[in-house]
Length: 288
Picture 1 (tube, rainbow, N blue to C red):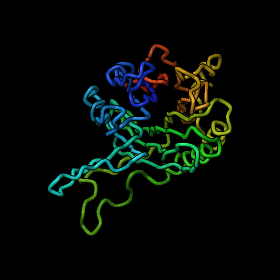
Picture 2 (spheres, rainbow, N blue to C red; picture 1 turned 135 degrees about the horizontal axis):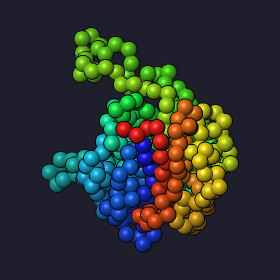
Picture 3 (cartoon, rainbow, N blue to C red; picture 1 turned 60 degrees about the horizontal axis):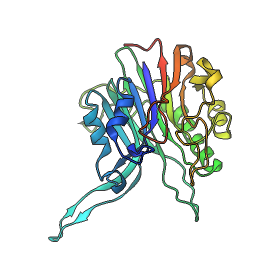
Picture 4 (spheres, rainbow, N blue to C red; picture 1 turned 90 degrees about the horizontal axis):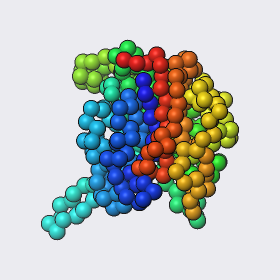
């Protein structure tokens, strides 16, 4: 099983060209893909629905999208009718296998008078391979303050721990007063095995990174297979005017039961579609 996590910066590379095709070329052939910073309806990215466009470029994948930044982009016609549209920005998960359920969780947000800050979120998906179900989390933390990120990581850790106890998107009997809520199918599973990917905006050994590992059973894939390169940067340009974070800030973790299956981790240094680089992990015993 090949997993990739990639903050695509809505497809804008360092050449300032928005090109979703080169993004998709970098991630095609992976089995599970977690993308952060996917746009819907933004002028900067051509006012297109990037979720739809990516799905069209990669039609052999199942896909879900969770929006965190969601504001009105509707148009009122001269006759008074409304064309309802939303301007959205969020996280997308693609999978070669069916995504049997998904949930989007908003993260704690802090207001700063002198800084732009937006609502962040993470997406939880349950993917049913041919041999097992597995949870996948696609997480994107804020970039401004450690305190905000700590609150966000705490929320992720809490959901991660509680989800298996909640038994999935729905649980219990499938009907209410005779109304079937699952089209006569079994309830989707909520397994304990999990993969957690994303742009955490924090480096190895930071307070946020340490909190996540101390309060869950998660294992950093790099700690298992390639400690020598654990601090390799995942950014194409380590510093910008607004974002003063550098190093490896994009991570892939797995639950403890999958740690023995980690075969290889790698940063794709050839990808040029974003200001981030894709991170890949291979699980040797999860091949289908």
